Length: 194
Ligand SMILES: [Ca+2]
Image 1 (cartoon, rainbow, N blue to C red):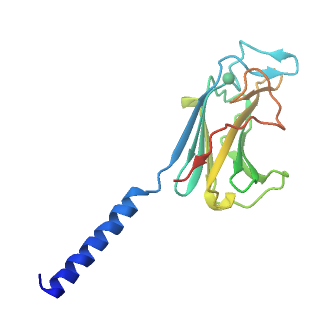
Image 2 (cartoon, rainbow, N blue to C red; image 1 turned 45 degrees about the vertical axis):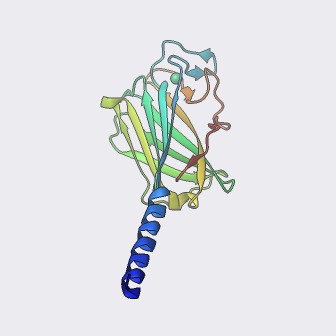
Image 3 (tube, rainbow, N blue to C red; image 1 turned 135 degrees about the horizontal axis):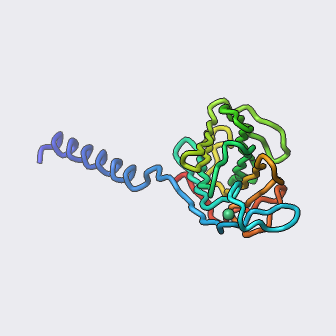
């Protein structure tokens, strides 16, 4: 083979090798899904098997290329109840964050707070959330840049809701009938960005 042709082939093989390498380590997102017990909301008086407000049935966490996103599937999202859903994140560098979406009674606008473990709010204008009674879902999405670009995250979820004439009911996505809002249970899985 002519030297120039051989060099061209060598360059092509090198480029292909780089492509294969790039292809072998794609930015794969990681997802965790936890199914929570039905009828396990808690009040100060104990468990409330018949209470659907605040009852988490499923909690999905997703660590994507640019964002960490959460989805709560609820037994019910009552538009006449106040609702606060909190996603807790522990990052690979040991930091802790909370992303909380809140909705008041018959108030279409939702509020979204992102805060550090200390409770101090942080600015994260591209974070987003929605509360959707029709599909019984609550959704929160936080850019990775607001979480310090973590390599991996561990996550937890908590919902608190107060019906029109009722107590405050709470549910931890990873606990059955026992809730401590200051100690939300984190999953053991480390969700890597990939
Ligand atoms: Ca539940």
